[in-house]
Amino acid sequence: MERKNYVLISDGSSDRCLLPIIDYWLSKYFPEVIFQGENAVFRTSQPKTLADKIKEAIVQYEPDWIFVHRDAEKENEPLQKRAKEIEEAVGKVQPVQTIVKIIPIRMTEAWLLIDEKAIRRAAGNPNGKVRLEIPKVSQLEQIANPKELLSQLLRQASELSGRSLAKLNVDKARHLVAEHTQNYELLSQLSAVKHFQRQLEAFQ
Image (cartoon, rainbow, N blue to C red; front, side):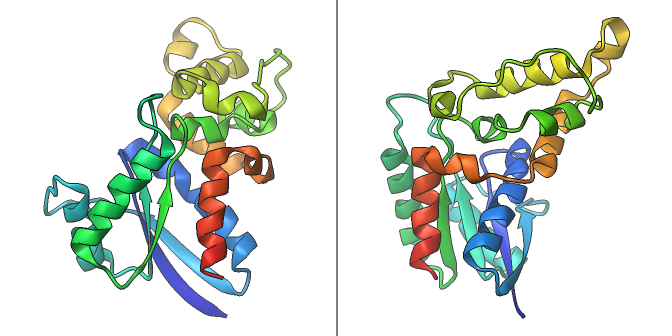
């Protein structure tokens, strides 16, 4: 089978939870290709602009594909505006690599609110019984702060209290949600995911 490597240039280190989501969709659209992905970490340099980050990622990781992530966090920062920002940065670099824009609305964590079992497992309590108010998929792009909502759900799912709850590593648990979610098909209903899918389809 053909092998390719990719790098994810994300808004922040916490957005590396996009890697399992990217892997899921790549396996769907390119089943004949084995992809190996990494989240870009710039240890020896501190690129400031998005264009500089893309340049540095090309040099440091030599990727076949580059996924560029930006959140469309506010109503006045729609997906199209973020996509244009990425395109302008790419235009300054003119890379030969395949570039894919990945723009969740409003945050990456919105894409992790679809699997109750994954949330319970990530919280370390897979057989928990406490009721979790998981939002409908159609509501995900309207949630003001999906990161905080996911954190609340993880704390509830843990069924811990007091000092034990205080010790719960919510940041780590959020990443575990992405790893434990086995099926991301429900996300196909979201406008941001449809935008992502159309790009993958164009490269088939």
